[in-house]
Image 1: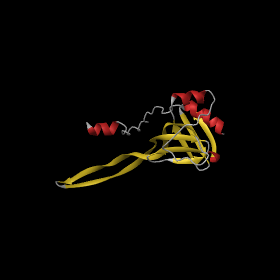
Image 2: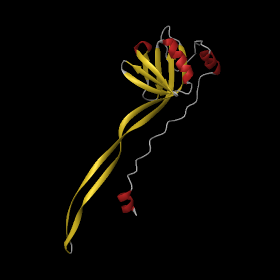
Image 3: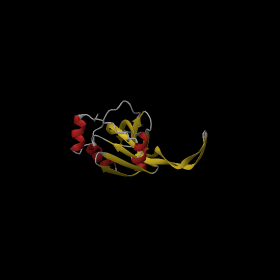
Image 4: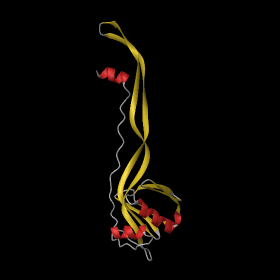
Length: 172
């Protein structure tokens, strides 16, 4: 059964990891202020702010990095075996192994802070802090914030993307 399955069915490719679900951590009064066009000054304790720097937005977020990874190998075999005498066989053939690569997303949960001077993603790994002045552009698609800086691009999922969009419009 295994021989026939390998012969006629395509190789199984492992499924891609799913994105973790996050809920908003932004207080309701801050959400209302942002959606009404105000810029609230939020108090944060987990981020070291610089002089004259104030936090305008923070929320739980997921950073998404798409990497080209090896997801499997596919082997092809061709050849035959001839029995010459009992205990003596002649085998000829060839085999090839093909590496299967695919774009695999990597997810990192953390918090996104937008201040009047910096955009900060804080997580256990893959954190960043970039100055707003080095931001080239940003784009909103569905619930994703795409940030393009002079050195690096970041794709971030946010549960309250409308609030982040309002703050980003005022920063730029």
